[in-house]
Image (cartoon, rainbow, N blue to C red; front, side, top):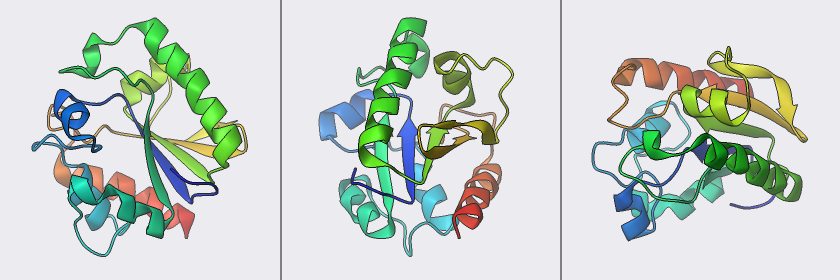
Length: 160
């Protein structure tokens, strides 16, 4: 993370592999790095170990909850609500232009917005515009790779 990013992507929580490696979206089946590249956020597909290169593109990474799990479904509602408060504090400190929460279910629970839909949200998080995008985890079979790329590209185009 760094101050005044174009976008701060906020995952739900680290996978066990991400926790072990110290790199976001490190699980081999996670589609984040491919989606980010094909949605035009990066000039090439980065590896999780190259995550710091994102800062050169005005992109940062964080999570709602720091506790690693095998699946995000293991998190409690209290952990997600606490994550929202911590994220709001980061936004106040870092002032990103947009915060993109990656996971509609986690967003709905953490932000107490049970009817939220994907895309830009009507409310802001501090000074940042708020978006919700699907979680790129390979465990999220609700969205094809093509769907993910199109939705992430929509955010990229909105940032232009």
